View 1 (cartoon, each protein chain N blue to C red):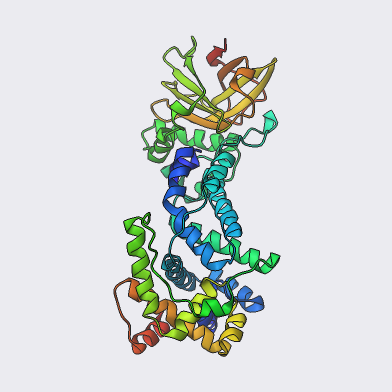
View 2 (cartoon, helix red, strand yellow):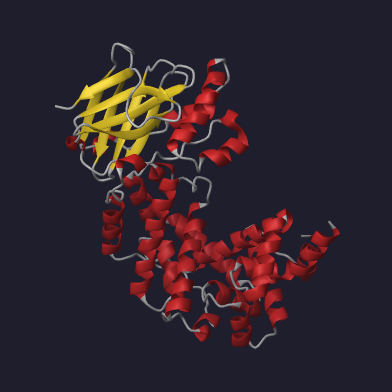
Length: 186
Length: 257
């Protein structure tokens, strides 16, 4: 990031080569159109290049910053320009699969396995809410309509899903009681 | 405190959906306002966001078409938009440790001349023995690889600063010019160094040059035209706010062949 801040093109190449594949994976999960996904991919990395030059990216977690920008742009594209997204039905039945691309680097493959395992371990209704919100970019009302659950239930499922996910990625498995206590005490 | 605690309780259930960007309308605005004022809830949103970010890794990665990379690098290599000479802009400087958090907030947003003015004041303290660690890091931070430069010009010191020396490197792919100078004497009280290019008898300021205790300084600034379009480089000592043209002592003068 620091080298990109002084406009070192080789640093941009390194960042792109390291991170473009998971970012494109996310975009392809959100949009039903590879052309739009690749357009956003290029815009996100160009935005990164320009933002790094202005200096405020030194302390960000780089993949998280890239994912968030990609996701926001994809959601904007769907909401404002009517670009076709994955349907709620497709997303709701989403079962994360493991990439089998031999070009996948080892770290990415391990991370994919770890998160996929954590996501699959969630109760179906919690996974469905997270999937619709995160990959589908649906609002809580849209999730409520897609799942037939009241808004309060959508909120509860989102909270529990994220808490369980966070715990699972830390190697913990929380009981219902622990989730309630964490909710009460912050 | 009671009000804030009540607000925390009211919006607690919405924080995960805030992190997922799934709130709407008035509720989204209310939660955003509350989170802005409540460090505890802001931290909870960040925790939920971190968990949500991990979801991106749940899907298989995919390789983009080669054209995406090519087009990205082509755009990134384009020069900065042309600017009028008077508005050539110096990249914001990293803040010296002794400048403190308040100065940091100011420095990242102020123009070059103002930044130099603030830093020059602190340079006095530095000469009195204060450590200049952050500024030294900034001065020492790498400029773009010299091998990428299309032209590198050596800069000798003048009679006013015989030990000074430096280099000017022009990067057409970046649309920028880098200046690295060392062994500069401390600027006089209330004055600082200003770098210039001369073109058709017109002076173009490259910005104020901040130096560390060793007399080292660096600049990286946009340069729309090629270096060959200019006739000479000057480094002069000017009032800390900068001058419209060089009036003070000439520290480095280099005429281009």
